[in-house]
Length: 164
Image (tube, rainbow, N blue to C red; front, side, top):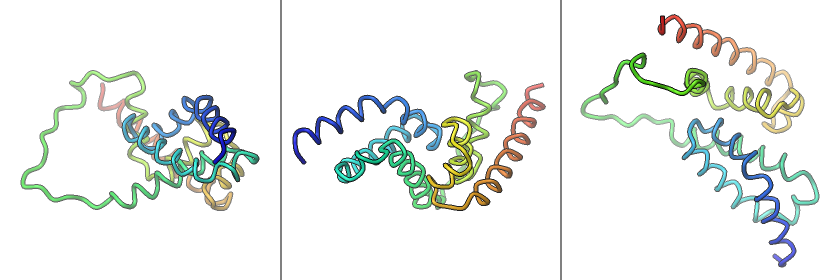
């Protein structure tokens, strides 16, 4: 790549980091996995920068994040057997951030459903735009969104009842 390509890529990353980091954290479920996901995608974006920069690099990176998270989830979804289960404390006794219940509910969704919810409500994309990012039909986005919202409502309602 030329120096001007490197400079335009560096400027894009500097301008877009916070925006895409927030999406990556929501998709991955925590800050560390989100950073790793974003960094992996930015490395792959650099390879294609000449082709992508003239189009919409934000849309391209957003799609890479969603697809990368689903691929990562598929690779890691196998359970690892252990000799004894880990100890858990009562979640009601733990102090948590104001949106911790929502974060836990989002983590309970499948990666595809989480991607739909994050792209629709956090990135404020239309159903058609979400379908383009995820490479599926608008109908699939609608059904995934409907199922995800039903699961979120149930999970948040249960959290409220448990807290009482």
